[in-house]
Length: 483
Image 1: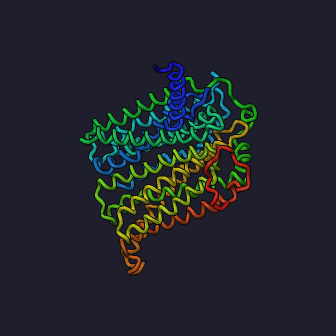
Image 2: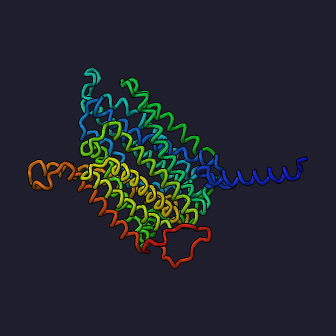
């Protein structure tokens, strides 16, 4: 006969086992705390979904629609898509203002989250009509010279400022709410939600716009505007306690706070490393798919899957970085590891052409996603740790400004260098050996490798010495990497 006490003990043991398994394997379940439960943390991360949706809309869907369906020039489209980068240098100021601002209700982050939401909504609301007016085939009865271009520029700028403001204030709010030992997991979750927002929005937009029409374009973009308000309103609802302004941050003006923040040698070196690394990883964005199609003869479907391959590498990086940082690994060292993976990745992409190996090319793409994911998450964790005297917004704003600005510059530089080298080869200035079709692309990838080595040089003095005390829980920390 079965002993009921044995059954009871077995049930209790199984319950404890499943609790541990759930916390270990359920993605980011251990990022939650008593003060910040998982449901509330996931709701807060919705602002990243709205930012990812807006980014996918502008860089992916509208980029193609403006060139193909609306017949605009590529140069004009590139200029419009680049306009949101004008907001990047202001992220530090917006972050500082969210540190020191106190509304009538006692909030400091929520007003800036809501301001960013309204800017995104306003820009997306007018964007489709502006693009239709701007198209070469616009109805002459409603066509006013320059009106469409001016309205489209305004729309892109509003969306850009809205995205930057929302993301800066939202990440600062996450920093305020997350316990210090849980911040690496929270950072990885925020990045994953951004990626999921981009992927989900891209798939949804492509399905809705399979049969393109101006009416559908208006519906898609304005639907994104409505979802932005909905997601961000849910994200900020009952998240920030009132009356949390730090007294030191409130009394100090921005110029003085910025001088104090940027005057620290380690901070300057860190921002230089972020600039070099972000530019290095972003230069390939504009040339990677053309390289696969023109040089390796991959089909359109095959090159379209490259984004998914890179995203897979990024997701793996987020999970790996979250676990290693949670266990006490040095974020500077992990960022350096990401840079080294990037060097290997770009070398694989370079050798894929002379070896005519599509498999090696895909491995390189996967490693690019892995390396950049490790680098981005680790540097964001460092930026969150730079918070002192209540200046989380200033630190995150500075990190975001450098990342967004240098990422955009790297993107523009990669495309420009490729076109310049192709032109010089075409007119015979580079000689026969350098006139191969893959050489202009190879130059971009070699420059990215050089920038990554510059990133390693900048990170070197910041890496924690191997003799430094380590967290007892740390089980993996790349001990062979030179400090």
